[in-house]
Structures are given as structure tokens and as C-alpha cells.
Image (cartoon, rainbow, N blue to C red; front, side):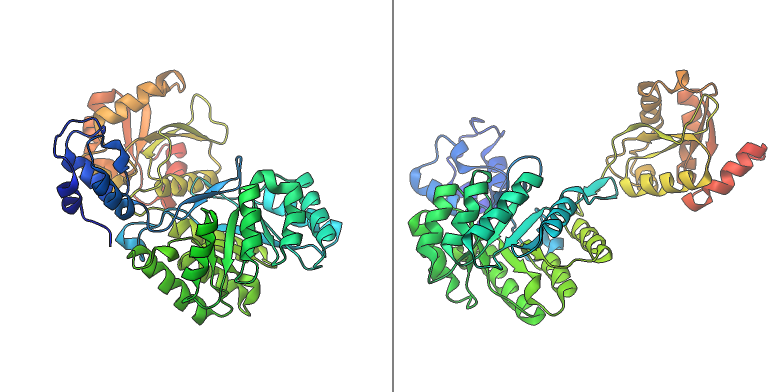
Length: 447
């Protein structure tokens, strides 16, 4: 079990020397308990205490990076069963399946789709992550040629899928320097697959349907020296998936069995309900998901679900404060002020664009709080708005000195006029009414 902050504090030297970078040993203990510090930072920690802390403060699910370059991503490092307990840190990677029996046209289509498909939502770019190349032909030369073709077309993370080490090695000949994931080590072939993982620096997936036997296979691979493992419990129905993934995750985060403290792999091609297995994998702990025949609506739904589940509920998505343009505004265009809470920003932006009126949006930094919350918490102040106005140099961008504020910010309208010297118009509370508000503004009805 993970140690609590006070338990960790008892093992520290209590010198408050600040050499670890924290003001007190208690502060350092609190960081260790949350996995945000390394015991090695304390120069006075005795070896026995360091060993205890090292095993109890490291993430229960091993972190690792998949791929290299711009499209690489992290998995693992999770520390809880339920998102509301803390948060889920690293979203699962989506790998589009590609059989090596596919023709050149299909190979190009799948590779380009993974590289170029993009869904922009709430200011974030949502994408598929890589290509899973499956040895359908069972031929090393065919498999190697397809891997080579993919490498020529795109630079993306890859999973090479075959239980035959010779076939996997044929693929690694062309992409081994990019550290792909290889699937899979079994009880029959694990020595050879471990050799390939070490030779090419790959992440290795362990395939074992009996979860009681996974620890034994993990320990054998660790003894050989493979540090980065991923677990495939070989599930092929939703009930089995939910049961096995939950058991493995629970034993990992409670530190009941350290040999299960690795990311999980899911192949939706084994399921009758491929969409359901994809959604379940996102919700229940899968770190790498291989997707087969994914229709565009399902892709967008999965990307959106993944974004929602792996957005930290304690840290709202925030927009960069500053001045944004809607359409092609000029010196006479209206200026709307709002906060940097992303949902507020994108809602208002959508209605302003729908109105067809070019205007400016002045975004104030309220640390991601909504308008109503920011006003109640004292985060949206006249001073802050005035500073943002000056920083954006808005007085020299528009010819008027009129600022439209959200309806929920009405209580500070008087202070805003006094502080900024601008005329303040109180807009609607509901962004859906912005179009009507602009019509009345243009007709001179709004004062």
C-alpha cells in the first residue's frame, strides 16, 4: 500500500535543510505521497528509508512513452481506480489496424487517415495516435515490406503484431530505430521476443489470458532485462474485459501485486461489439487500443469520450487571455469581454460567428473560472479587466471606447466604468441571445 504523508515524514531526517528544493521535510513528504517528488532529492535519507520510499512513492502503474517525435505520447502513471478519486493522467492511444495482406491503396489510405484526421474540440486537437500492423500473411518478407511502406508514408507510433519473432524482426528491420511496440510475448516465445525488445529498445506486450499467470510471465521478462511491459489479458467480450481489467488495475493501484503494475492493451477486433469494446476500453483502463474498421461517427465519438474522461476535472481547460477576432473586425466593431473558461469562450464564439457580425473578444484570465463563479470569487475584477484592455492595446485598435460585458458580470459594471474610463454595456446572460443583442445594438435600441 502507498504510504501517507505523515508515514513518509517519519522516515525523513527532519532537518528542514531545504536542499531538496522544498521549505520543510513535511512539504517534501506531501509531495512524495502524491508522487510529485523523488526520494533521491533528499541527501540525508538513509539507504533503508530510501528503499522503502522508492517502492511506495513511485506510480503504481509504470509510466512509459510510446513512439518518438511530435506524435509520441505517454501512457501509464495512473494511481486510482476511479476518476473522481484523483484524476486519470494519460489518455489511451488509438491505433488503426492495418493487415499486411492489404493492397497499397488501403495501406496509403489508413496511414494518411491516422496522420491527417483531426477533430478540434474545446481548443484541443483530437487525433488517432498510430498504426497497428498485423501479420495476416504470416510471411516475414510481406510483413517487412508493409512496415517499410508505412514508414515511407508517415512518421507515426506503430505496434507490430505477430507471435512469430522472425516476422516481428522483419518489421523491426525498417522501424526499429523508432522504438515501436511489439505484440506479443507468450509463454512459448517470450525469450526471443525479449531479445528483440532489448535489441531495438521496444515496449513489449505480454499476452496471457489467465490473469493468475501474468505475474509469472512478467517476472520472467523482467529477469531477462526488459523494463517496459504492457499487459494483454486476451479479452474478447465486454464482461470479460470489464472483469479482468478491473482486477488488474485494482491490484496495481493498491500495490497488492507489483507485477501487474503495467499499462493495459485492448484489441477491439476480437469483439463482436467493436464500438462497445472501444468505449469500454476508454472508460476502464486501456492504455493502447487497436481499432478495426472504425466509421467516422464512431471515431469522433471515441475521441470526444476520451477527451472528456482524461480531462482533469480539477483543472478546467483554459484559453490564453488576450484579444481574439471574429470575422474581419474593424475600428467600429463591437468588443465583447468574457473569461478564459474554455466552455464559455467556445459557446460565445459560436454564437458570435453565427450572428455574422465581425467583432472582437477580449478574454480575461480568471484562472479557468466561469463568469458567475469568477464574479462570486472576486477573480473577475475591474483592475484585471483594465490591465487586460491595456495589454491588448484595445484603445488604439477600435475607435470607440465601449465594452460589452456578460450579463452575469453586471454587478461590477459601475466599477469597470470608473476604472477603465470605457462605456460599459451589459450583454445578455445567455450567449444564445447574443444575436438578438447585436441586432438591437446596430439599430440603436441598446444603450
